[in-house]
Length: 117
Image 1 (cartoon, rainbow, N blue to C red):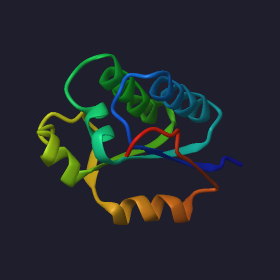
Image 2 (image 1 turned 90 degrees about the vertical axis):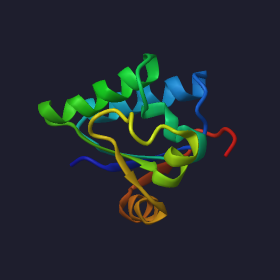
Image 3 (image 1 turned 60 degrees about the vertical axis):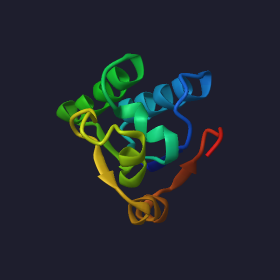
Image 4 (image 1 turned 135 degrees about the vertical axis):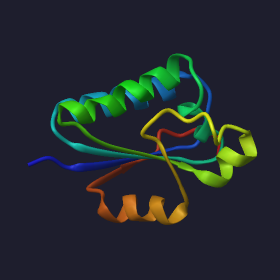
């Protein structure tokens, strides 16, 4: 039986932290776990536009076609503030803190890879 793992991202840099979080999400999905991601603050821009990180987010979301269960929610207010509201990767949902708390309540494990926020 798979677990639900919630990831809270707060930083938008293309650091080792971000790469590790994306790799972890991929491995969890491959093992049949449900992954929920809430991108808060500057991390809301990770799933915007094009580029290496946005492409990685899109690839993770496409796993749903093959049975993976990933929910990626970005802080809607942050996307407006950052000017990326209209350029999110397909499948990313703009939401709010109520989504974050729902992810935390439903998760078996909650991870925040650190960073500023």
